[in-house]
Amino acid sequence: MPTAITRPTGEELLRCELTHVAREPIDVARAMEQHAAYLDVLRKLGVDVIELERLPGHPDAVFVEDTALVLDEGAVILRPGAASRRGETASVAAELAKHRELFHLSEPATMDGGDLVAIGDVVLVGQTSRTNHAGLKALAHALLPLGMRVKAAGVRGCLHLKSACTAIDAETLVVHRPWVDLRRVEGARLIDVPAEEPAGANVLSVGDTVLVAAHTPRTAELLDGLGYRVRTVDVSEFAKAEGALTCKSLLFR
Ligand code: GLY
Image 1 (cartoon, rainbow, N blue to C red):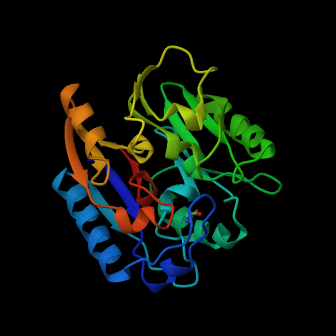
Image 2: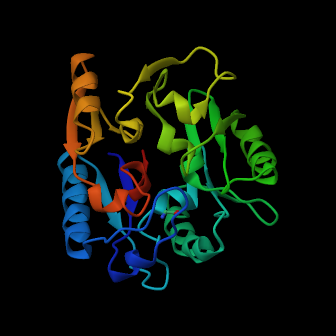
């Protein structure tokens, strides 16, 4: 059974970090409803959902994905690029230690999980304001014994690599190409999201179902037409906090 580590949010979300989007009012009650519905979808898809304690002093803590990289062979506890987010990792590490051997990134490395896309035996590492070269080198070192390699991917115009590109399966990436340079990625099949829906590039595969943001209906249609089993999930309040579907869980087997 897949497991998802998640974390609730509340009023703290109003003070979230923003990098590429303008601040606009977030309806916290609606965000909490959307979060509950997201967890409900995961549970209905057979996921064992773990809810960590809320962290009211950490506005972005609901975006647990940024704190760790979880692979079959182990997990890497990251060092988020925004100083305001570094206090989020300890509680994630305590939970993950029950499931995986842990490796830790340390200063001067910075890296957000949103910048990491695992596909086959490669982890693509987004080059963004959150993830530095020391982070890339430290991750490469941590993954070597696990038989995995890293490859840098240039990112522009968005917060994270996963804003621009996510893996739908072990060979396929869903991508908004204007935001990411995938020239160094070999062998992957690329599915381009409709140009008017860049946010469609953040999809979350759960078993044989692909979760797509409800505010990207054309992407949902596209993937449905390609034969994927698609389910839409409303994360519109989290999009205002520069978050997306993948950010809200650490999903692993
Ligand atoms: N608001 C999400 C982040 O900046 O990490």
